[in-house]
Amino acid sequence: MSETEHYDLVIVGGGPGGLSAGIYAMRAALKTVLIEKAIPGGQVNLSDEVENYPGIKNISGAELSMKFNEHADNYGLEIISDEVTVVDPGLDHHSVTLADGRTLKSHSVILATGGTPRKLNIAGEDEYYGKGVSYCAVCDGFFFKGKDVMVIGGGDSACEEALYLSKLANKVYIAHRRDAFRASRMLQQRVEADCNIEVLWNTIVTEIKAADGAVRHVMLQDTQSGQQRETPIDGVFIFIGFVPNNQLVPAGVRKNPEGFVITDDRCATNTQGLYAIGDLREKYARQIVLSAADGCMAALSAAHYIETRKAKSGDRTCTLP
Image (tube, rainbow, N blue to C red; front, side, top):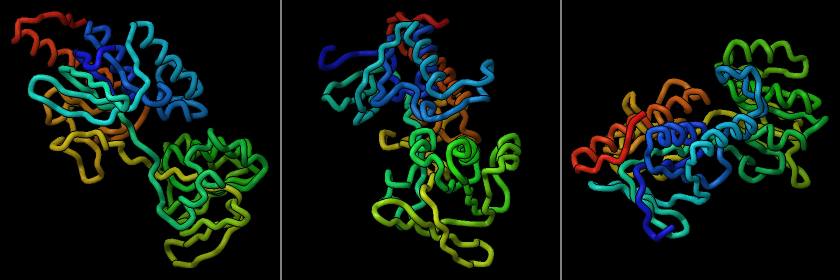
């Protein structure tokens, strides 16, 4: 690759949304490249089981990611394993700078950078990360086989991870600040039916304590009475949502107060030729199928935008499906 390479479309991020965008972009005959600094598939790789992707009753997250990647590869999508450091919008072309110093120019950019686990920001959380504090049960659950663990949260992820841990741990506690879950009813029923899971309602964790370099206790507080107590525990798994990875979002692109990018129904931002999809985008729900749908919509919208630009300049080299 030369120092500066020109594309129709650059996709930043290789999760379900980014790979879906890549598939549709290749079908639209766009010269496309996808940049992913880690493993294609993103957060899906960390899911033990996926049971709600249409047409597939049950599949591991890693296998579903592999299928996404194979599908994109079948269309010849170029994937660069590197980190993007800057996305700089321009009037004629957008510029995407990579960590190795290369610059990619493109008519359009799709940002599919996803999000990262939200932190509790309590004492002991950062200090004992990797020593009993985790944000991924699939990654670290094996290390707590036969031990007592605590899951913090009340959404789909918290319930899913608690169910996974219940197969390994001696006991799983779920600490939830409210008196009802936000998870889907099916997941709630599974948690309620699992005799290895105990739910601590109206409870927050205020501190994580360790001994000999490993987590040994947590401080709990009742949100109604304010009463505190110390509970012995071997591992803490935190699932309280995600914050958007919006560091690459250019200045001037509209975001909501939580930092999620505001788009229209075509995933277009207020900057022409720039799109945001998946967990980076403001929307009602965050599911794999919705990220894939975002990728489809953004790629089709980008293809139309690029076709229009080329038609105006007299360069019609892109053919829509």
